[in-house]
Length: 285
Image (cartoon, rainbow, N blue to C red; front, top):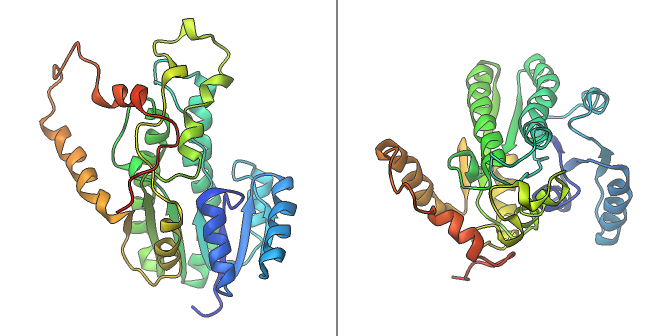
C-alpha cells in the first residue's frame, strides 16, 4: 500500500508520541490522536520545532462522538495505542476504577476499530495494530486490573485477526515489557485518587512501587514502526525479545501450579513491590 495514512491513538505521550513522531519524521502520512485539546497545541508546537508535519486531532477513544468523527478519516493503518494503568489489588481497587481500566484499554479500542474495519473490508485491505503488553500474557500482584484488560485485548485481537484475514486485513500485536516512560510508575500512584483511606485497604500502597527494572523506551520505537509499516510480519511482537523466555516460563508455570503452593508466605513479586524504588532503570547490556 503506497502512501498509507496511519492513525496512532494515545499519541500525546509515551510510546504513542514516539511512534507518531518517528513515522512523521520518515515522511509518512500520520494522524496523531490525543485525548485532550491541550495536547493538540503542544504536539503541533513540538513537531514544528523539529521540522516535520503531521495531522494532530483530539480523539478520546472512550468518547462516541470522537470515534464517529475519526471514522470520517480515510486511513489505511490503525494503531490502537491509547491506554491507562490502574494499580492496586483487586480486593482494594474501587469498582469505578476497575471499570474505567477496561473501558479505556479493552472496550474503547475495539469500538474504535469496528468503524475502521468495516471500511477496510470495503477496500479489501488494511492493517490494524494493537499496542498491548507482556502483561497480556502474565499477571503481577497490584497490576491485576491492567493485566486483565490486556489479557482481554489479546483475545479480542486474536479473534479479529481470524475474522478479517479473508478480507486481506492484517492484524498484529506489539507487546512491550517494562519501559521507563512514567506509565508504570504512575500506576502505583492511582490509589491516591481512591475515596478510601489507608486503613481501609488490605495493602500499604504508600510503600509499594512498580516491581520491575525498566528499559530505555527509545528501544521500542524502531521495531514498533516496522510492525506498523508491515515490514515485520509477525503477529505477536514482544519487545525486548529477551523477555520472551520469561513470558513463556510464567505461562508454563500455571500448568503445574498448586492451589496450596506457598500458602501463608508473601509472594515474591509483592515483596519486590515493597523493595523496589520507583523508576529503577534496568542495567545496560
